[in-house]
Image (cartoon, rainbow, N blue to C red):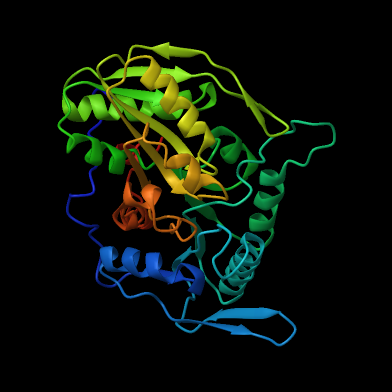
Amino acid sequence: MASVRLWTPHEAGPRLATADRLRVFALNATEELGSAIAHQLGKPLSRHEEREFEDGEHKARPLDPVGNADVFVIQSLHGGPAASANDKLCRLLFFIGALKDAGAARVTAVVPYLCYARKDRRTKPNDPVTTRYVAAMFESVGADAIVTLDVHNPVAFENAFRFRTVTLTAAPLFVDYAKKLKDEGLCVVSPDTGGAKRAELFREALEAACERPIGKAFADKHRSAGVVTGDLFVGDVHGATALIIDDLISTGGTLVRAAKAARNAGACRIIALAAHGLFMEGAAEALADPVIERIVITDAVPAFRLPLGATRDKLDILPSASLFAEAIARLHEGRTLTDLLVY
């Protein structure tokens, strides 16, 4: 991190010119987060209409003028609670097309959670590379850029798109959270080798913010046909608070596996951090394991699948609106994103 100063969510909000060409829309499925982002920007959401038809078809159109405007459209592409990921993707694509047809100068898709991002390579013969197909759909309707949060594989994501990609990280939010713990010994743990770069980015940011050394470790994991194997754990977590960081929580098995390995290696407290809490079937039961003390996620995906109980009681949800608003303001004004840990 050296000379790079990390942005924190407590800093003053974005400064926007009073008379500008910025328009911010949020489709209905992400209206709550969209409204929070617009509030951080100091602008109301631009008006739009979404209509449903009897046969299941739909349409969306802007109600505010967008000619020659710099338009940002917010839609998180997770499945549920009222619509599938496919339906949300389709609505977003059609709306981007409508904006371009209405004369928008630039349209940026702000996608807090990007569907199909985990299918970024072939793992079996004749496998689809779905991330690339999704990218082609965004390109076909005229999108100019896409912003997302902690995509599963940033390199594959960037290579899939032929226009500007911005991969935000929840690291600034997690750094702010970890600093408040006031624990003397901290160690950042990647639950698998594939997430080592994400964990190291967070560890470096945390070390710079705390101005003291932060340990690192990783657990080994190999997944094939849904079966997870591997029991290697590398790093010194003895007597430390282990911060296990990942991009998402699905069933929770990966986190619990890494947490138990860290506990066996001598960690005194274990906190799980993930940008996206999907909490699929079985997650509530798996994550109720007392080996994990706290679970920290952002609100990029609402925790609607997680029922009341032991897991919900140890859940901390960090608001992400300030992070997205800062990115939107800087993109609109052409300012650097470096201290948001975007390179």
